[in-house]
Length: 422
Image 1 (tube, helix red, strand yellow):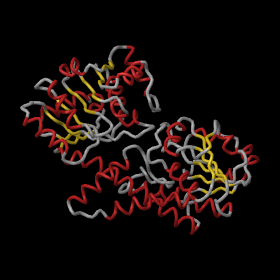
Image 2 (cartoon, helix red, strand yellow):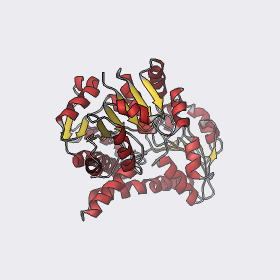
Image 3 (cartoon, one colour):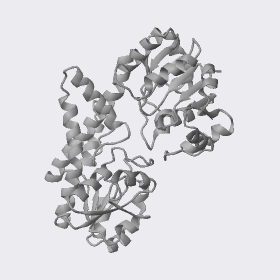
Image 4 (tube, helix red, strand yellow):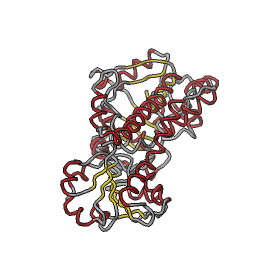
């Protein structure tokens, strides 16, 4: 049976090692952060990710998943080693150090987001050092809040390599996915690295496009939710990322687009569509503030409640969160903000530097505020007692940046309900 190793105990490494072990394969996860590895071995992750802790505990209990800081003892036994640090600052130095430990038939699979050309440079560096390790580029699309699902049900597996032996070994590694019919696309390093950045940029463009159309919908009595549904049913377009809202975010979204923009600049290529999409995304929080201001006659001196701070449900990550951008915009225009999130308050506190009053429930947020904003589409917000909330608000205004709530029901209760594009 293949021995698989994962280097990195952050978001990527933790998800990859746990999910590979859940395939029934022995996996070790190594890193230099002993304290974090000990915490993971006890079945606790330093971040919130749906179903992940359960998978870790199950596989640690059966000894399929091992956490260790002793890379020098474990790495030599790995047939496949995934380099899965969350950042690429130490990528070259780490790869060189790990390659010196690896057997000559081993594969070093780089899943860390990195600039186009990185894997080729690593490959050349190892060749110069006469280290016969095969380097493979594998971009992974793991979204916070559904990373386990993304790993287990991918749309495709991208492998950047010219080694048929590497392809065969990795198909064996991903056997449950390959047998299910997940397509495997084999290409060169540069194309594989560009896939991730291009995919992020394309999704950002779709999201920005539907959000621009949502602005038209609000002026002509059209419904952007129905519009997105209809567009998505066109097989040339597809439905993903056509839901109007307050923009896109996530821990890797901005870095992916920054990397693509830098690559274009270095090669004297102007990415007009990407630049426009990013500008639309940046402007969306101001559009929400304007909507609130019209409803309560200026946000200056007003108090606004925000339900949800994470960039999406089922994660505590606030990286690129539209709710965080909205809070900053409100504060800059003289409003005070109070907020609640089921899991992301500590992360939000670090981002917003104590300028927000944090509450322990959605009802505490609603008490006496001038307007209530749905900032993250946590399912639990749908089941709140809105008749109770109606009586608590100073002004019965709800701005639903995720179109999470039933607009008709909210208006029947008596709210001035303001969705996106509705």
